[in-house]
Image (tube, rainbow, N blue to C red):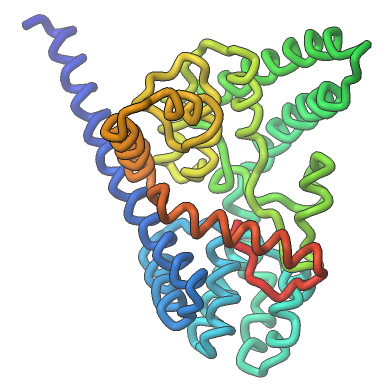
Length: 344
């Protein structure tokens, strides 16, 4: 065996070991998150509160949206101890005091005396977040996204006469954006998400019109998740052939990308085998509908659930509960009822 081959085997072993270890971490994290969400959806606030505590106390990094939901659940569960702990974590993960004060479900509760100590320490807790963020990289990512999003909106609003020229221009802009992002990934080893560049702030960049309308901190819906991963979905939509999945999967293991966001991008990939899907939508749904034998349809669903399990997503049958909750949220929104915990 040559020295080069030995080195290759050692590096491959270390890479697989790293990947396996991180897969366990991401699976454990999102299994706990899922159980907390399911309990919340079913109205079991005590169990949801307990699961959120396990999630946040057992993980060094926690997504801001999970801290935000955990705090709301603690109020419904009348758990002041967890409430103080969770709101502190909210501030550490970048959620502003203004966002907390604006939320209809929270605003009446934060005047309780046991939160006074946390509010006195708000600046120091906020500073923990500010020191963790790579601000130069954040600015680079925002500029790339703003330009790509501008031409994406322009293309989306195309009419019969300018559809083709707008499509040509946007495809070129998207390719430039993807090349820039791939360059960043090559520099730092992963696609930067919330853990690296922080959460969305209202002034961070201009949202698309639908997001601007629906996600509103004043109505208890602060959209905390970064949007930049959507550029990869656009790339796949235009027939991009570079295999970006492996790069994004590494970002998932590094807690830079959420499973649902990774799955969303991956399922837009054109050159995809039938056993590689994460959802039953678009091309996957077409493939499923072509299967006439029940056993083949069952195997198709089983493969999707296996893939989802590997990255910490609900199985499809549980996903239906999640989707129903999302639909309920939208219906309540239209009725101007903002007292429903928003699950991102």
